[in-house]
Image 1 (cartoon, rainbow, N blue to C red):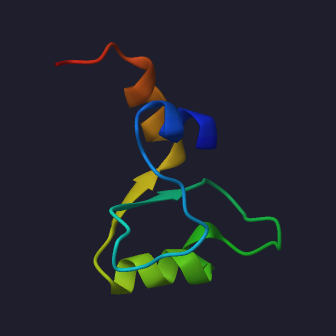
Image 2: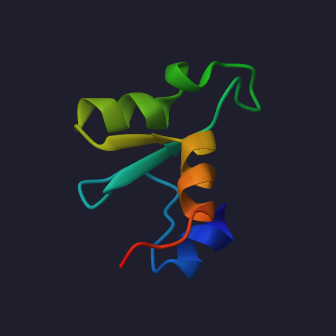
Image 3: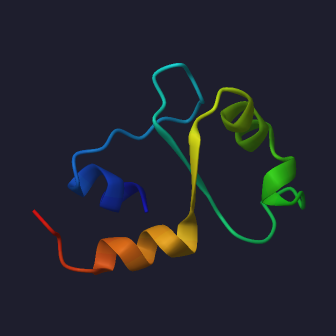
Length: 68
């Protein structure tokens, strides 16, 4: 996913900040066994009003032809 974001001109960050435009959220559980919605980064993004993109939906939209 990181390569895809970079390919489309995005910037990848490991932290949520005031400069974050979108937060990519996976589905199911994270590596530590928590649900995605229980994670610190997810909660921070929600608190800051950052748009949450679900991973499966992003993959579908990116695979569709670009509409310029």
